[in-house]
Image (cartoon, rainbow, N blue to C red; front, side, top):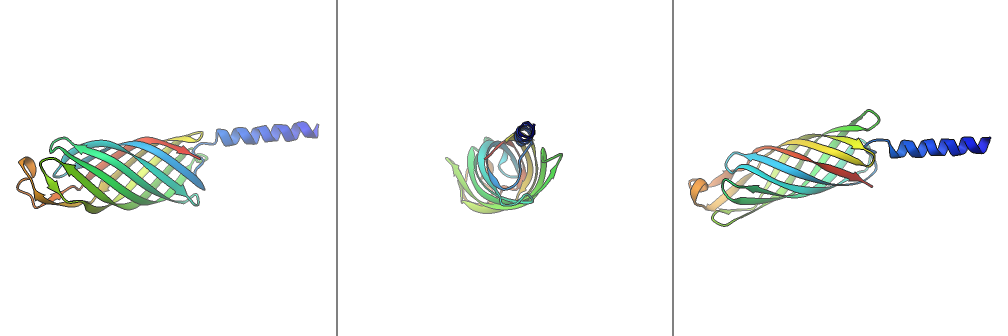
Length: 178
């Protein structure tokens, strides 16, 4: 009889681990996301990226991100290389994890007709992850503070010395936990 109780308890514990939600906390997370950025001088940009996040404790995490955003109005590509620190707040048994944070990055620009210098910027962000097993859906809102020097340009950017890339951005994606 005692063996059946131990086996039943072990099965219950295994089921709880599998169905436990985000499983936020110590561990490694890898994700992919789609991005949008509404920049003041470059217009609307769309793209995507990937991130790696480490959670040393439930409340704190750090992530590194790389992405690509294309601004079709001015035909400029931006490659953000970023890092962020996050404070996590879990609810409903960690099925929902809200977070706030801040980060910085180095932003590479590539275009045919404009000459924008690569630049350093920073951003505050808020987000939420809704978990299903070891997979979560991610939604983030952020404001990018970034200015890039314009060395030479045609069309929309020809009268600017500095391109104001500041703007509101949204990331939507999926996170996998290990």
